[in-house]
Length: 387
Image (tube, rainbow, N blue to C red):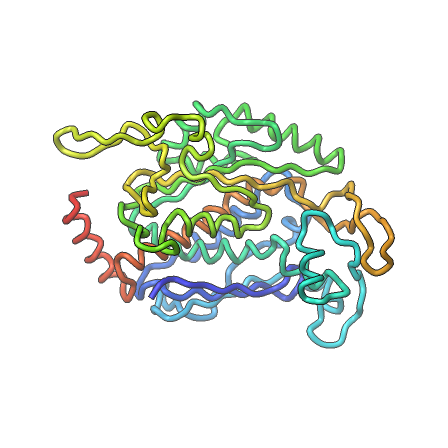
């Protein structure tokens, strides 16, 4: 059985609910570490007022006993503190039909969702399509990280670009190799490993806020110590890069995914793009990692390196033009509380998405009834391929 999960809940409802199934029995779980992942998501320069209100803490309902998994589904809830202000508007029973939204915001799910599900009030769409859902995605990823930690697999992320401001690649590539790279990224208000670029990014965010605008950016995610052979070449839906791309593209506002060198590889001939292999008398090694750690749909033992593009948040304090679907008149789009940028937070969400895919592939490869069986299978595999 593979890892699978479900989430439920609305942005201003009572809370978010998650269920994850497939983690092996007897896996140690550090709930403080799980909650720290939720804390990390709420940080970042340019966040809005909602992050000052919510203090996400996971409340486990089932599947864990005495800090270890039971092998049964883990269910958990994140309660929305803001629910107290929305109990009538978001009531499951009788309530007040207030704050009705009939003016779709460009770039949001408002219009296609209202058309698809036949809603007059687009709040029925935006409540679920809101990036608030990513809090539960991070919680799911945090449980998956507990499995990866057990096998010394680390996932880090850092911001390469916000708006037009780009990090110095020589600086960030050197920093990303360090053991404390994740800690260093977390120390930056914009999760950038280049201190000079961090300051310039924050200055750009301040200007965008003053102008009522928003900013997107580019994030890099690196998974370290991933063994070769996760995923498969035998069918399209088992390819690891396809699964990673799908998971990352499902994150709100992510509009592009690159693996390894990505689109820059289009400029190179094959002789310069592909990662040559050598043997030094004791082990096989490569001269570069343009493939980003994945060949033929499988991990190849190198670091898995991914870049994603997060678009500027479409909810602007200086709203764009739209049309009122009720009156068919031209208006400025509805304004909802929003961030100036959520690129640093999106990096943490992206880590969670990658963690879920890698944990799933790990379970598929090594079995997932118990952690001891998984350890034995992993160790036999390492011995066979002489890692």
